[in-house]
Image 1 (cartoon, rainbow, N blue to C red):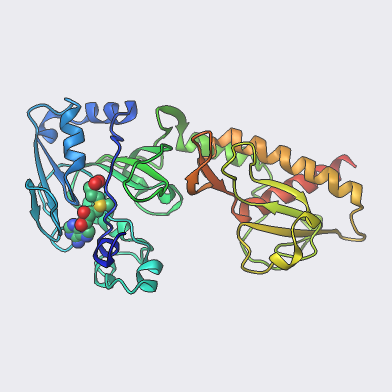
Image 2 (cartoon, protein in one colour):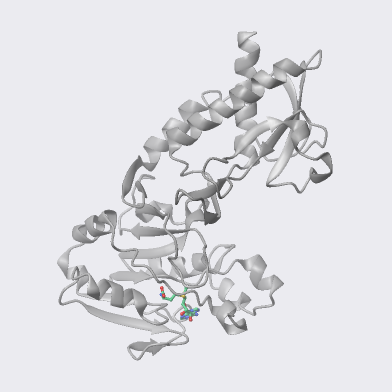
Length: 357
Ligand SMILES: C[S@@+](CC[C@H](N)C(=O)[O-])C[C@H]1O[C@@H](n2cnc3c(N)ncnc32)[C@H](O)[C@@H]1O
C-alpha cells in the first residue's frame, strides 16, 4: 500500500529501462558534447533512472546529480526541487510526480501550494514540474503520462514523443506513459512521433492526414455540447447522450484486442445507462430534417461509421485518441473515443449515406 506521503509526492518508481529505444539514442546523439557532461535528475527517488542510464554505456564520463524531496538512495541529495529548481544544468532526465489536481483535492493531499508555482492553471503536478524543467534546461528526457500529447502545453520545444506501450514500466501503476524528448529551439509546431521503436511520422503530417480524413471539418464547428443539433449545414438533427438514440457507441477498447471501440444498434445499450454524464458508452439520436431514418438505413449508417472509424485509427495510428488505463492483450494501449470525434464521424458518415441514397 502507498501511504499518504506516497500519494502526495507521487512515489511511483520506474522499473523498466525506457531509454533502450532508438529514438532516445538518436536524440542523445544530437546533443553537443559540451551539454552532456553532467545530467540532472531532479525527482530521483531511488535513483533508478541514473542506474539505468549508467548501465547502458551511452553516457561515459558523464556525471549525474540527483535530488529528491525524500531521497531513497545515498547518491540523492535532499531538496525541494519544485520550489528551488537547480539551475545551470543543460540536460535533465527524469520521471516527475504525476498527481491530478482533482484527485489531490479529493484525497486532501495538501499540495496546492505546488500548483500555485505554475504559470498556468495546470491540471496535473507533472505540468508544473515540466514548466520548471524547461525554464531551466536546454535538453530534457522526461517520462510523462501519455495524455501529455493531448494537452496544450510545452509542445513548442518537443523534439520527439514516444508512446511507451509496454507493461510494467512503473512499480505500482499501469498508468499509460510516454517519453518526451525536448530541445532548446522552437520546433515550429512539428515533432517526431513514435510507438515504442516504431516511427509513426511527424506530428504535422499525421494531423494533416486526420484533417483530410475529416475533409468537411472547415464547414462545422463541432463542439462537445450535448445539445440537440439542428443545422442546415449537416443536413440532419443529431443528439448526443440520448437514452433512446438509434446509434450506440462503446467508446473504449476492451482488454481483448478484437473487442474495439465500435458503433452498434442503439438498443444494445441499456437506456438506463445513458445520461449526460455518460463517457464510456452512450447512444446518439439522428433524424432527417423532414422524416425519420428507417431501421435498414440506420444499419447501413452504423456499418459506414465502423468502416470510417477503422480508417481513422489506421490513418493516425491511434496516436490522437486518449489512452485508457491498462493495455489490451496485443500490448497496445486501450483507447477512448472522445465525443467530439464521435460526432465528426457521425456527421461524415450520415452525409456519405445521404449523398449515396
Ligand atoms: C514518480 S517518482 C519518480 C522517481 C524516479 N525518477 C523514478 O523514475 O523512479 C517522483 C519523485 O518525485 C519526488 N518529488 C515529489 N515532489 C517533489 C519536490 N517538490 N521536490 C523534489 N522531489 C519531489 C518524489 O519523492 C518521488 O521520488
